[in-house]
Image (cartoon, rainbow, N blue to C red; front, top):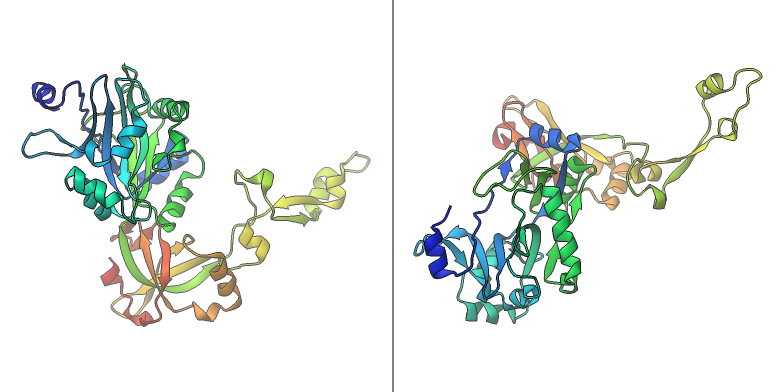
Amino acid sequence: MFDKAKIEELYPEAVMIPAMKIHASTDSQLRAACDSGDYFGQLKKDGYWYQYEKHEYHSYLFSRSTSKKTGLQAEKLANVPHIAEALAVLPKDTILVGEIYYPGGSSKTVTEIMGCLPAKAVERQAGSRGLIHYYIHDILMYDGVNLVNMGNELRYKVLEKIFHLYSLDKYDFLELAEVWYDNLYSRVGDALASGEEGMVIKKKDGLYIPDGRPMWNLKAKRVDFADVVIIGFEEPTREYYGKEIENWQYWIWEMPSEEMFLEYLPIGAHYGEECISGRNVAVTKPYYMGWHNSRIKIGAYDDEGNMHEIGVIHSGISDEMKKDMTENPDKYLNHVCAIQCMQKDSVAKTIRHGFLKFMRDDKDARECKLSEIF
């Protein structure tokens, strides 16, 4: 914790709650959490953590990094006057947590704004790059009420309510972190494939532990690149069970099987029309479109020249590519592609949460070695 006397001297009224660290999970930990139903997910942006504090006479924006001069968290609100003005409507003694970032940018572009003097930061934001964004994902205090000892889900619901109550949604540079509850493990892969920095998986009843690294907040983040060989394809999942079922457009008519008749049509029994004429079934888009290659098996060669399968990729493959892989599989089989993954298992020689980046026609398949990947 920080020196309270020093805080009061330099930043009157400030609370300065140390940031909670996020546990970098293994794939098994991540999958177990995602499948448990006890967690929800929030996207992680490629920016920097900042804590906003609004008090009666002062407002602050503290970074995670500690100033060598003061020993306290660095304060940067003057670099983002547009954010200061927008959040001024909040009641006193309110503390928000989020990431300062540029959509489509990186942490480097954030440093160009937050790492310079206020006048230069304002000047740079007046250019073509535009105003920097604040992606808000947590709240630690509201109107003097300490929320630190409340669960993650409850704190988020408070944040969501006040975000709309004070019309913060009218600013395009203020963003409320969206949350997901279902299909979390798949959503992690989809988020990584779409170019997001990662996802934080939070336990619903997990508390905020200042300067701690609790196991109930897990981080899934983009990490490793690799060049691999496409060695095969997998058939798509048939039936669709997603949450878009009411507006789903991919359906097929399924005729009743012989087993259905035997089970539901005993002699003299009454039976429904579905058992006579069939039923309408929601199916996945790849199955409906006849794209037989919606997942690709990937591999690499050992030092003796033997091919080893190291995983399956289903994220990052466009609809156009799925169609083309079905119609022209030879364009892809035994060809090299670049992937990015969340984790490499150097013992099992497998990858986790891989997604396709692009094809590499400039590289021979024999150059893809297990020893280089792992």
